[in-house]
Image (cartoon, rainbow, N blue to C red):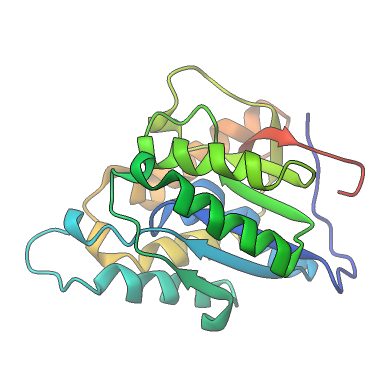
Length: 220
């Protein structure tokens, strides 16, 4: 299945991005974020953990928070559209109810047209918990799970969004904001391009990002 986000008037349409940790959405769907902004969506972004415990030695505890806001700005998303919670890293299952309450409050507040969360098949306990609670909070909303291939055991490809050169550049620029994560192999521009091209091959596109369809209605 494939779908596109063409340039159109999207006044009044809201896309909600859900990140378990800083950098999740940029890695899984950075090109699609660029397309959402380009299409005119109002973008809201909830980040549930800044994972300061996982920072390399020598970085301040607030580093990932600063990097997250910088990455959002590269897409043209203002700081007041990004909200950050402080759920402890790798302990999301213990805070399941807190996460659900945040999501339910957001659903009532913004009534988003399109929500993105981690894939339900993601093996990371934090990603999996957020995806499960998103499925509960947004039962009647278009809900798509972005793919982080290194966390998926079996190949999963149910929808692709085409990523053009300009969107690719935006994704690279956003990931480049994360200097604290630069040593991770999947942050490299070459690795990002390989993954985008591999996803594109499945649907006859030059580059694409892959999603798990969780809920999808004709409103999209």
